[in-house]
Length: 370
Image (cartoon, rainbow, N blue to C red; front, top):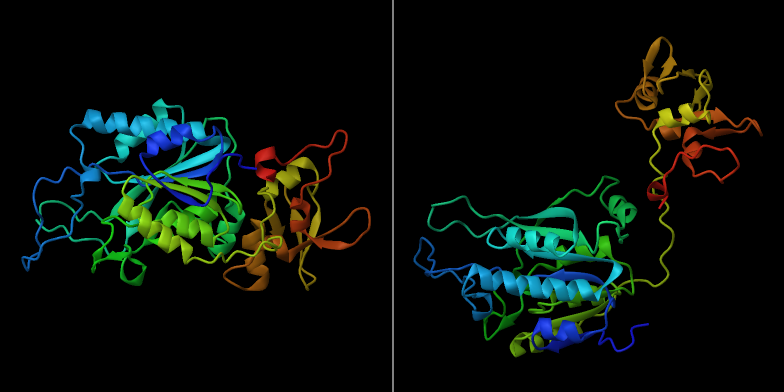
């Protein structure tokens, strides 16, 4: 329950003042897209002499680095007070500000989990030809304290990524076209983020029903994606124009998440190397395993390799030889005989977490089993 918490609202005002007035430990995730303090000193023109619509808004202007650092410390401290003990924070920035933000995060007691590179597939060219084209921004993902638990939907991400681990380099285009919020025929906000970026952040590190806070609402991208994904939200902006745009945008969103989410059928078993099954005695040294639908048998060696027909290697490499194929998953193709029933089962069944029993050695730490 969120007593006194203005969920599913866009709040107008100073984010630090508003956050300091909200209940402590009341939000699950923060996504912050703060001013970058770009310090632009002159107009930028394209080679055809048209003016670049750069970030020259008053909300991105600070008198000094010291002023910007004080502002950053204040809003990050306010976010930390609002985060639940198992909550986490994302902040995005460029080379202009992200290193200062990262240092202050650590000073305040946050613990950094990852820095993620958003690679822009359609970056703005470097107009003066004096530097490399700035084609990325950096996101920092941090938990509240070093020892805190946090939400990371690893298995779901991996399943959706063709069963490969999600990496820390993300490729998305800049926000363009119909997704871009417009005002009087012009971009409503100079730095509107693509919805795909927020979609990944929110699905990766929150659960349906979680409360997500965005202290710098802008045109409401965080709230729009949160609502679509079945999360609650609180967003804040001091610019009344942005508040109006965000409210209208959010009102048009229909949640698309099914409340009844089935178990992930292809979620991987806890990551237990084959050699650990041998070391623990669950598959004793010298055991014989059979290749699926054949009479080809291999012997289990003490170092976790197996031997078949004079060839020695991993369960996967020897499976490839048996199958005559360039790739083969040994976990599903090698079978062992259950010592109690005699039933043949794929060796993958041995990776299922065993029920605890006296004297049984555990192959899984609590973290691996979660």
